[in-house]
Length: 213
Length: 188
Image (cartoon, rainbow over the protein chains, first blue to last red):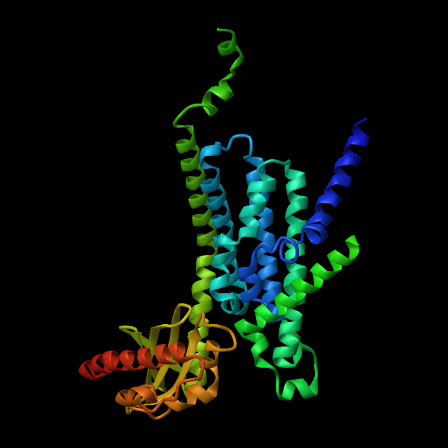
């Protein structure tokens, strides 16, 4: 009996995790958290750093908010969520500044802005405040990885077209000679973010529609 | 009467009118404690990191330097005890926040080299203030020439990043004017 129940939660754990990545992908399906998606997807480095930050904050806030869900008064739940999220973001930015200064500098203003990332507040309100800690952890990883994958896809196209090559942690992965000589710089500038994200959203929408037919 | 019996101690607290206020206060208090703790752990590392960065930049501007003194926010660059230059830190308001620039002056009070220490400008646009084609324009200038060319100076702004260019240029000039007075009057 106990074993069966444990297996059931394990199954649910993986279900929640997969759901966040594919079915309710925060960026491509729910179209949430577009500010960081547009702003820090200009290079793979920034995309990975931002994703790591968001996963850390999401995991921390989901765990704490889920733990407090039975004693949090409904009246002040949003301020409580914000305080919890802001605490984790501040911890993150202090740690980044102390131990990863180059990444801290390149993320710049977008690091403190994780506080108002609606994906994190959204998960707190919709999921963590109503579900057990284990499921909230699964949800945080699922949604976090979903966000990561989306950011990496956008950053891949932007960096490739905008600089003619790809670079991760200071190591050049590869570069296309013709593109590197005269890169389409518009793709690493803000308009490029809208163009790439728009085309990707259209593409994923098309897949969804074709599947239904 | 019956319903009163059913409500336990826990629900009595939860339904109290001031409970939300108390709860939120406790959460904020715990958050502040936690942040103080993390801050105390990272503070020394962050300060050391900044200090080390300033020293490496100074070393790059003055390859001959073997010591420096810090007086009234002015780095006095020394070589075997002789003054070979002065460095100051200029703070300007950029497009995305503060831009901190180290201004290296030679002993004739002309700009030797500038180097942007930290910035939160737009990547790919404003961050071009870091590149040598922009910073090299400052070399050998007197304070009154450190202005954008459209403001009557000798610095060409970066196209698409006028705010960042102006922030660096104006902050460098203002810092020079302010600190040169101190340097000259105190005979550093």
